[in-house]
Image (cartoon, rainbow, N blue to C red; front, top):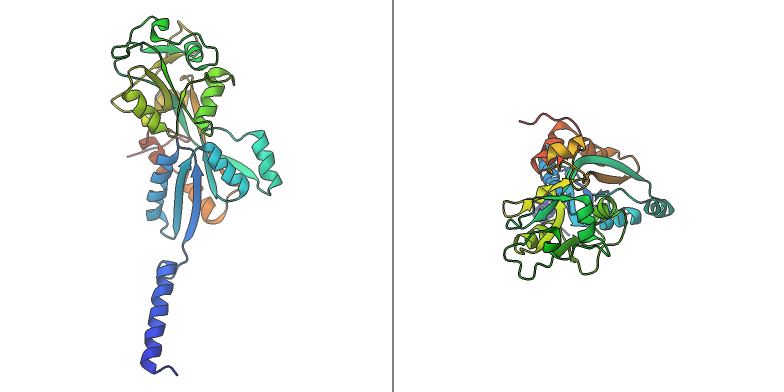
Length: 293
């Protein structure tokens, strides 16, 4: 039989454990958010800031690529999938066969930058030239084919840096630059956006593409024109918004059905002035007009 003192201690321990599990008496909700490496940094920033908005909701963010996030949405193992490309028709069909109903939310815009080593004398590239560098059967194999010599690039062979094929950035670049043609064999396919920029920074012969937000002072971004000889446009928040940059794209979040409850509240906050000022601060163009302090 329990004595009064032992019963009090037992109740105290149980109550403390309950409060700890429930965040001070309130059940904490967890939002699983997975996908695009392009969006992962801003998604983490959103998740951290939202803790101050609603401490009862925890957003668990992970990357892995747009394909990974969309696959998780199809399988019903994620609440929000991040993607830097639009979901494909076959993926929508697969989701519906699994009882899921993908709903698209445009949460911002990105200018997909083409990165060069700072010693590379080229400042401007056209979509046609990029296709000849990146495309299967392309004619540009050496920097001398483009009329330049890159200091520190011993044999002048272009080191073509790409992303892995589960990346939305990979898919979008393929569509926008290669017209859905194949990438050339021998590209160096990097797991993350930052990895692309790091490799270009340390490899004079290299060229790579990645989100604008991953730019650093140790690489330079090419000015891109739609056709050789036309006026070129640099990637920026402004040129992504006004559509003048040739490789600009929307950034997406996908949910299963129209989001309601705490998931709907979170997406509403992301699309608010506060949430959109965060994506602007991270180097992307917001999806709405914002007024940031």
